[in-house]
Length: 447
Image (cartoon, rainbow, N blue to C red; front, side, top):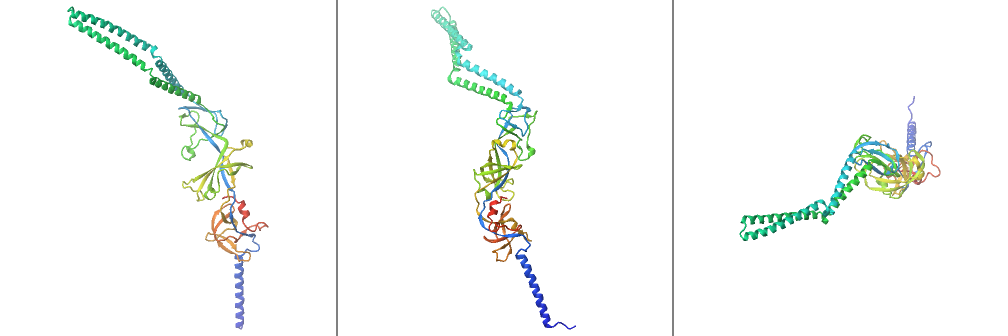
């Protein structure tokens, strides 16, 4: 067999090279452009302001809550309602023992009567038995002094005539001094009694009486309050945790438990309106302000929507980690939505029910976003997209720097430019799908 000629060898090499070039070209075409059977469409990325509604979740909480505490130290005799019961204003909730309170009330009544008697006696001091006795003692002392003075004069005359001795004269003078001391003592006693009628003394007695009467009224009110009545209409709430946020720290008081004025027996929530708390990240909180309308839908009943209003937007980031950051690592701020249910809502609204809310905030800053379906992942774990400048340009795989991700779109911070076309796998584009992301940005929610 003759070896192949030089011409044959050159022809074989040329055929092999052509085959290799064809295979490479076919492979590149498979990477740079989608296969004929691959479903999808090209979408032009455009930078524009986002107007997606914020999608929030929360639970219905009473707009206000009133704690019902024990009026006095005693024993909880009975509870007439259970947690979760609907109550009306004035309804009987519980009963606390009043034995100790009645004892205090009796003592307060005695003290009040005594204070009233003391004030009356001071106001009528001159007609009192004590004052009359002092006046009689003064009169008797004055009469005794006058008699001693007469005897003293007679003794002086007899002494001057030498009829009596010096000792008798000195005894008469001593009697006069004793009588004068008795008169002075009686006058001081009357003056002391009259001081009780002085304006300052009467004012002290009046204030003491007022204090004792106030104490008496306070105890009477507490005695009446041993029957605990609901101050408002609403729902009896479960007790709040007393030891941080640990549910096991909740203290529930039942009949027979010893109670003090510091113990909260029941809490009634005002359900004439509801306050819903939600968390919004720092990128969206700038577009939220008090007064904005909120659409509220019950988690268990999506057939009916209610209207709420943003009542408060916090100026400080707060979160469970204590550093003001939420689960996504960004600062989150508390927002409160006020919801006043219509009269025909009936019992469909219950405390603690989950609700879904949507809020149309002010348009945010213009950003470049692409559909989430357009993003793939490289072997290195980086986000990549198939991109081209125009229909006549060759497509390529481009790594991107992804920003905030929403439900069905992602912000692109670097990697593609405004006007670039990205390949979106999936259903073939309809007449209104190709072009820009206006439809995407107007219908997506927040993630």
